[in-house]
Length: 107
Image (cartoon, rainbow, N blue to C red; front, side, top):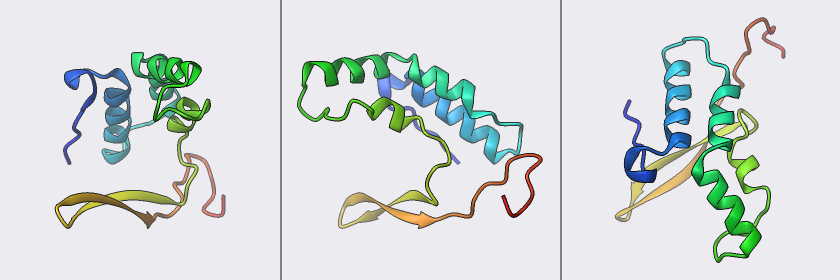
């Protein structure tokens, strides 16, 4: 698996935080999302997006964009991108709910 950090010439803290969190999940290390989410919320990209909403910048419309981008495990699908007609096109793929430590299979 390869993570590609695209923002800030590969140094975007929100991208790195997300990649590190996913890497912990994949390797089955303890993975609490709160630290990664906090890093993303404090990132320069989050500040720029929030500022863009306030200034009415084109392409930045929703005041909750930053919060929406940092929500974890709220949808029953993942977006998987594949090449279609020379473009990368994301499509939803159903995923089973992730069990939290200490939860029963029914939770």
